[in-house]
Image 1 (cartoon, one colour):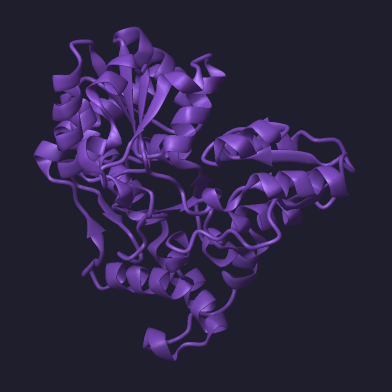
Image 2: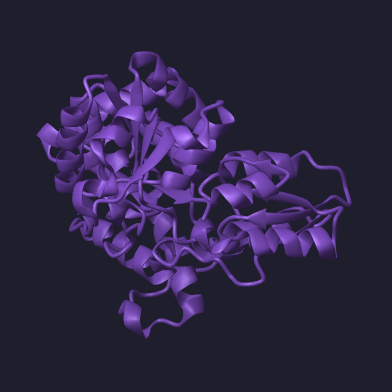
Amino acid sequence: MLDIYDDLKTKDHLPEIPESELSDEKVLVELAAIKKRLGDRVVVLGHHYQQDDVIAFADITGDSLELARKAAEIKNAEYVMFCGVHFMAETADMLTGPEQKVILPDLRAGCSMADMANRREIDVAWEYMKKCTSEKIVPITYINCSAALKSFVGENDGSICTSSNAEKIITWGLNQGEKLLFFPDQHLGRNTCHKLGIKLEDMVVYDPRQRFGGLTPEQIQKAKVILWYGFCSVHQGFNKEHIAMWRQKDPERILIVHPECSFDVVQGADLAGSTSYIINQIKAAKPGTKFAVGTEINLVNRLAQAYPHLDITSLSPYQCLCTTMYRVRPRWLLESFRAIERNQPINVIKVDDVTKKYALKALDQMLAIS
């Protein structure tokens, strides 16, 4: 946890003032006070991409896989405050107990990648693919999707994956059938499958905006992996020109990127891996090591601050910010805490029982493989 929380928690509690009338500093002071009063009733989970003044109040930080695991371990807290995006809060709701409530401080905190696939589109694609081939297709969904899509995977004996465990899950999937349907992120699917030895020509992209996804029955029959067209708008912001710039400008700098980046970027980088992988590589680096990091800017800046003995900067000269993650602000976090204190919680995320049943099946499959 950052020092900002340690500094604030010793200050006296301010009388409750309407959130809109508080200065930014007073919001942080009031947050520290109310969090202390609520104590163990609330556990705050914070994704690595959150801004520093939100992470300051997180009890647990991590990437999607780590936070999913930690959510499943929370037994006593009445409330789980999820500082992330909507699909992450849905996952936490499914993994916590029925008496616990998961809260998302801002319901507008979504994910553009998750929005690139919905249940109707997946159902249509699935029926078309099954008509095109008699071979068994195993569905794998990246955790960055709605609970409805996680449920689809559970209903069809597939699994969920994260960027941390994608290799294990895809290997498992290929052992279960002849083909994979991987959604919604084409880049994670392509990069991981290529790393596992699958040729690019054995992968095709299904685009739901086109008739039959833009694929003929022959292309479906020939393919080993069918990738959904989706992508992360943050990691899509890195390109091969950024790789070339650093190779010319500072050839000794280590280029490390997230596998949600495009194939050209991952191939051009020195290292590629999940958020946790990036953090661990930087943490283990020798003093003076220079990195250009291809991932969300809040994390890059936090790493640069945490490891001043290293030279850490973004791969891109432009700020690659997750704008939907950025919607979770200290002010909305404070209002969520206040609502709990009034015993009138707001922004409670709840997945219906039918969806939860099959989504949990897929989540449990992932955790068993991982």
